[in-house]
Length: 369
Image 1 (cartoon, one colour):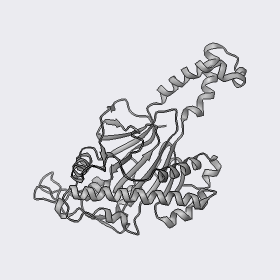
Image 2 (image 1 turned 90 degrees about the vertical axis):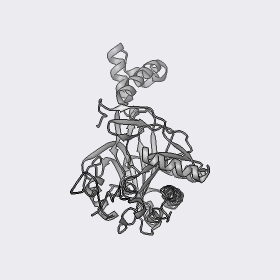
Image 3 (image 1 turned 135 degrees about the vertical axis):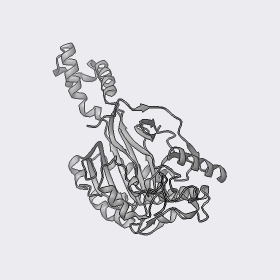
Image 4 (image 1 turned 60 degrees about the vertical axis):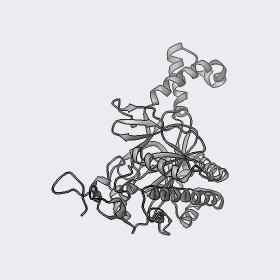
């Protein structure tokens, strides 16, 4: 079990929500500002059809509602497949179960056979969703490039459009922990505090113990509110597009020690995260934001996450327009395969991009190799 430290500050700060239907000049300005300040924003009026989203949500809920044995047929995650509590290969754990898929349509169609009893329907839902969120990610990346005044606005988006793109989809399910323990809590609290006949619980629990249930739920929820479901980290890819249900828990940390809760509303929005690779591609202009998921509700939380990544052989180096006499290259060029290897060799919360910085011999300024 991982708990948040007491030295952390949780602060409600209004996070940017960007309406993609506004004038393009306004959208560019808002996206650049949000990416520099937070490395995070939400988008609305994104034109992704609701039926595409609902179909994906239905398939996700259907999978996670299966028995543990049935879900394990799609695992273990190595790295793709079903995983429960174990995150990665270096000892990280969380209060989460997940399904990690490569975003390649053929890969999804093949793995669907171990995931669903109706693989055609499942793969159709996932591929349809991936196609839409990929286009959204590419649109946002082109807006970013234009906002940074890079002449070729496809300089970032073309990395996602590459046929060999290493993009991923992960479905996260955070079960309501209170339902796993409420029976023991009822027995313990009611029996110890009131000497109630425990045998009555199974016969007429709803009528006799409704007040006790409410009290115990409140105490249990307060105790669990700082439990971490998915530990703090940055995403190594270029851009992350996340959709969740109406249950909160996501938090971002734009600076050390400060955590900002992300509201699940508006429920039509998508959350957008700057990844490590985009920070390198923008020469540090945009910040890869640290984030985590908290188990702070007695309701089920589910999220569907698209990680837009380049092809393994893609060379990551920022456009020359983002290099100035006052700000040289912050990071040495690297391939996605190289950065991915560095990611998998470290713990979830480790800083990885720092290893690719280039230090000047004469000062603290970062310069090109």
